[in-house]
Image 1 (tube, rainbow, N blue to C red):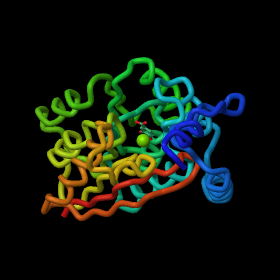
Image 2 (image 1 turned 120 degrees about the vertical axis):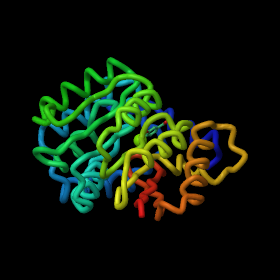
Image 3 (image 1 turned 90 degrees about the horizontal axis):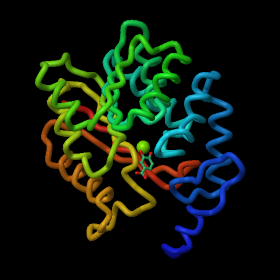
Length: 244
Ligand code: DHB
Ligand code: MG
């Protein structure tokens, strides 16, 4: 597919009520996601509502897929995370997965730039019954996270970086200030339809991914891998890192 053809697929008129996908997604990829999510992912009404309310945010359809949300929840549970820090709330879909994973007495702090998105997220967190264990912090994440660092906030066990991509290296550096040994760091959207391999890309989001890959590679503190994924969200991927 040429770039123009790929763009045409991305901008295709969606089915009624379905937001335009952010990346081209083959019907077969979507069918497999639907199959696994229907079989294995236990979304209740609150999670469905949170996912669908992404359409009311400034970035419709940017939330993780149901099977990816379940992966995030499982990573939090497998690592025994009690405190999760999230960069990029949107409607709070992944936030609900984390909040449920950390359980009663756990804590999630999530950063959102846009007040309207934060309002949608707060509705979703209340509906999911986890509002009391989540702080939605509105503002530029780089500023909000510096406040946490300056306040000497208790370390987090898992950090999910899923906000503006050019700032990925800043968010990783902050995550290293706010975590200890054994902490898990997950970064979303690191493949971007394959664009990540273009070292000359003029897209600052691609350069933000490449810079954070370089920072992880150079860090003696981190073991990491990256996986490309296909599915209803198109061709994208995740970095998963663990602090030594
Ligand atoms: C984009 C951002 C996301 O967090 C995502 O999951 C998909 C796409 C974007 O910047 O286009
Ligand atoms: Mg994302």
